[in-house]
Every structure is written in structure tokens, then in C-alpha cells.
Image (tube, rainbow, N blue to C red; front, side, top):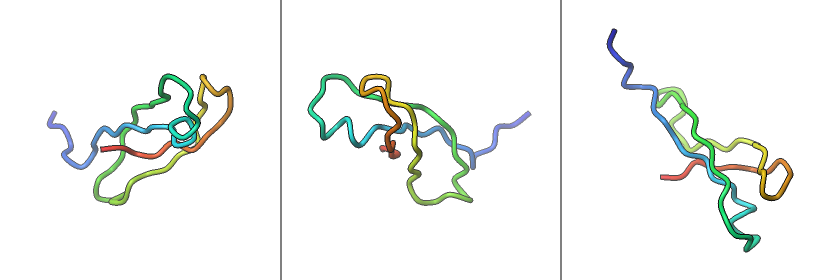
Length: 60
């Protein structure tokens, strides 16, 4: 079977962790449909370093 060109892999990075100055980064990998979601996605995910749910934005 052929793979769909519309479904791409994206990396989500924590925005609060970047500004806090703590060492390390919180990143998640997910997939999105390029045709349906053309803008960058923003999801609330758990940050294990800060031990709370924070906003993660798409990078790249």
C-alpha cells in the first residue's frame, strides 16, 4: 500500500519550559493532516520536568 502524502510527522515543544530557564526540553512527536490543518498546531500536553500540563507548539 502507498503512503499518504498528506499525513506528516510534526514535533511539539513546550513553550513555558523554554522561557522558564530550566535545563532540558519537553518534546512530543505526533502526526497531522496537511490538507485539513495548514497552520501550526498547539496542544496541551504533560511536561514531566515541570510536572504539569503546559502548551506545546509545533516547531519546524
